Image 1 (cartoon, rainbow, N blue to C red):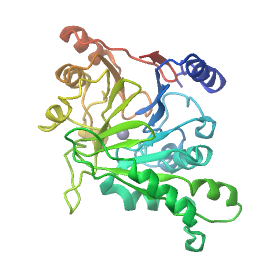
Image 2 (cartoon, protein in one colour):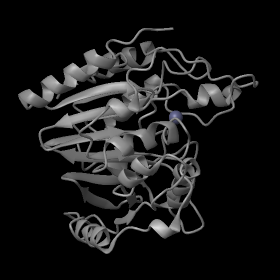
Image 3 (cartoon, protein in one colour):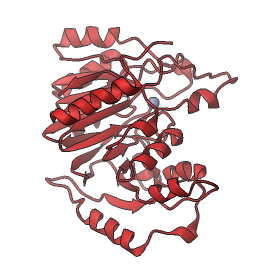
Image 4 (cartoon, rainbow, N blue to C red):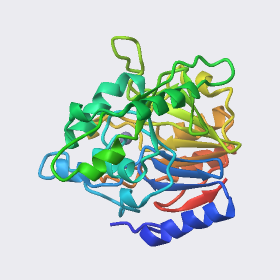
Length: 332
Ligand SMILES: [Zn+2]
């Protein structure tokens, strides 16, 4: 198995240094997971920090053999303001990652596509069965209402984002975890919507995985996000192929960093695909990203590509890029 650049205590020390020195810094945590720290807020994009898929598919005809070591146990990451899930696939919405994270970061908000609300609640609730008798107190509801009132976005973006408290969860021996989970909140976004979440401005960007799929109300099931925090603008693609609406949706942001997938779209893998390295470099170039960082590779043996094609295309296009290893950070 590939070693990480750094993991566990070394990774935490790197994060603590950036915090104490007030630096904006971005770490790749594997697959599409990134930790962004700025003095104005800390965002965790699409974390997958368990072996739930390897376990689920063990002994099947689609084994998810891990390529790179895990960088950190989710419950060891603290000080997280916002966590994102770009869509419902487990490498982007993993209960075994999110529940420990939400338990140790009771202040954290979870940004999801509006279309996926019921699915998210079911996936997280399956681990911690709902106990309706333990609903949030009125005081907590009021806090949620006040927080929701602060979510108005700026500019010409329609702002229909809302905050919804996660139901309190019960279960044998889970009382302490449940009490903390109760403070967590969902923030729902759709294409073209924005929300200010714990000091971070989020914008929903449609993604095609493999198509721009919508629910019966026309809401996107797959999103990317633009996050603006501490003077930095980050585009996290989620999982996407190129589609007609992608560059137009991103044109006005001129991101400092574009986080783009490079594992490509091969039908024989029997999973939804992504941009390949050449397309990912082209997208970063087309939206004027000051730095492109590749992701969605080196996690599962059946669904990875080396970054060579991405790097060659960046060179050819004059697109600045940085290929990180798992656990490695870059100052922004
Ligand atoms: Zn994925």
